[in-house]
Image (cartoon, rainbow, N blue to C red):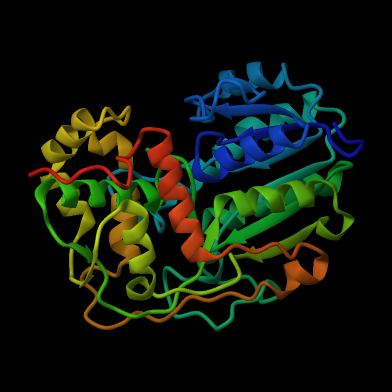
Length: 372
């Protein structure tokens, strides 16, 4: 362990960002405590401690905090989304209050127990700029006044700012763009959705159409890139009490990146078509289960595998939108000027994560034979 390393508690460790954070911090010599209801899908040989905790339960959080006296850093990547309606839930007061309560349930007892706490990272997103309620200014910058809409981001941020002002630790707030990573069964990760869609198309001999017909310019961010940024911020004075946008560093359009995605899953790319991936995967659940058996996969049924990410996929492919939606682009100048300049090629990111899922026997190998 380096001199700067310590003990990091990662809340929401089984999520798309939390999983990558556990992997990266552990690989860098940190002592990692991964907190989530289910264990992150990571190799048994990776050194970390898992605490199965429901952040909605005060007693569980109190008990866990008693075991976290040596924690020096926190990555708060836990998230509650409404399963009956992901996008509609973003404006629901109970969703906002639940996310605030989860943070308080953990941080209140942890602040008492972890006497050497130095730094807390908190995840937000582009909804901080009101991207889900109105057209935003391009590029969105961190110095803009707080957008006037209700959001649990503001509730959590106010809590963290107030707590930090009273105690001897600093914080960093992160606003990533669309995140892609290695977690499955989560609210917002398109990798399992894209992989399952490809597997079903292969089973049925269907063209692998790009589900989006609009050429809106977008930005992605690799969960592993975020993990590296979290580790940088944990010990960098330039990150103290700051807010940063983070992206891969390039842009993409679905139709243009689709050939790279198709190569990664071993299919020929087909042109754009207005397909609801939520409906398609729901209707082909039995075909997915057949693919799981035929390829010897360890993936569960389609619902538990994609989580709420099929709803998120329809949003990001703009299903049902009559016209191209406006782009949501952010500036990452502030983060680069602060000293973190890492970047990722988005086409390579898609190929790497889809290949990773295949290696972990969650998706068919790209060169698997097409059924006769």
